[in-house]
Image 1 (tube, one colour):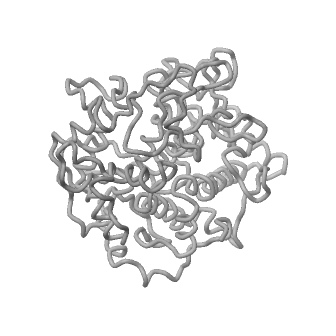
Image 2: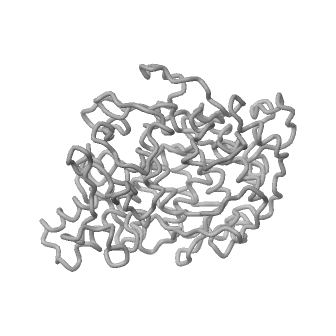
Image 3: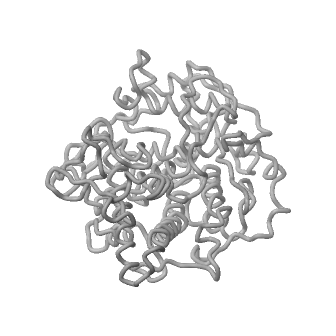
Amino acid sequence: MSIHSCVISPHLKSSLSPHAQDVEKSQGKYGRLFPELPALSVDEQVLLLLGRSGSVMDASTAPSPDMQDTSTDNPRIPAGFTFLGQFIAHDITADRSLLLHHARLNELRNFRRPRLDLECLYGAGPSGDPFLYDLDDADKFLLGINDSGALNDVPRNRQGRALVADPRNDVHLFISQLHLALLKFHNQVVDALRLQQVPAASIFDEARRLVRWHYQWIIVHEFLPLTVGDDLMENILEIGPQFFTPEPDEDPFIPVEFADAAYRFGHSQIRSRYLLNSRGASGQVFPDCAGTCPVDQARTLEWSYFFKIPGAALPQASKRIDAKLAHPLIELPARVVGDTDIPEQKSLAYRDLERGEALGLPSGEAIARLMDVAPLTADQIGLSAMGWEGETPLWYYLLKEAEVYTGGEAMGPVGGRIIAEVLLGLLVCDPTSYWHAPDGWSPTLPAATPQDFTMADLLRFAGVA
């Protein structure tokens, strides 16, 4: 069955797993998908050992200077989808807590609406956040001028800080340039609506709706199939979700199993080094491409290096999804993590593991059993050599699951289901999403394939590819 013709059945509520109707929520709209499962307790020394430099999660092989080593490449997923995934995370979650100890769920606060509505792009709109918009044309976003005089940067203040709705969208070059592409996409949609003589008073709202709906379409029809696999995606669309089932008219919660484990798969997708453009610029995400500073023209991204653009050479691939992180993520710079005397606290691997421990996430094996999926064996997990004989931290387990089931080309059955059900669930319970358009909806903007829309189409319409 084609993904494009699938719909989630509205008649599945009675067949859902019992716990699907009984989740533990926080007042800040985080919750647990599996409240009946016990927390996994892992000794702190094990987490330190897993996450430290040179240990099992450190993909420490240095990238070749000519970028010809493709041994860790994921041929299925272009590199740009790593950063689209990060952008999506910023759209639906903003938890500012620093969890380095055990925490109750109600200590978490989500400062984002749990909707795929581009709040991290639009903020509160021209009236609520006027600094995001052009003073001479309030229907459009303000753009930034770079060192060559081109509108190829996000707008910034005189100290170089980005004027964007979510400062996390300037944490590194890649997401900053993606944010810029979406600003330009909106502005081009405004121009298109004016050519259609849409009433001036309706231009902004109509442009925002079209941008949101095309973005949501990309998530359902491109990002998720690449991330979780076509078969699992079609299964969920045809049969319906089994574990994340918010009511269509309720404000949903964000499951911690999603936010603090499954969806952190993207950390494993980051390459050790990226080519930026045809001018030969390259760099590591950190520290070479760290953000919060103006983007020079020489380092402006060419999107054909990150997404499949018709007529261009194939883009560089994302890294395979496995239980290893590129070495620059194991030794993050102080500007990202702050000053610390504990070397492991510079490691994103350790920080992700510690967060799962602090939130009392269940083991990966426990969730697999609940989903009626055969758990990975100890040999497949591969931690016995470290002396660890217990069950596995959820984030590490789901990365290993991807490695075992798909060779790292997509998520496995447990991690993939959590990701797909949550993102689809957020869309389904949002009455303003394209899912609830009368008589159905398919993309209306120009695209390589009529009634479809991909990231390549978005970038070309925005005038950046």
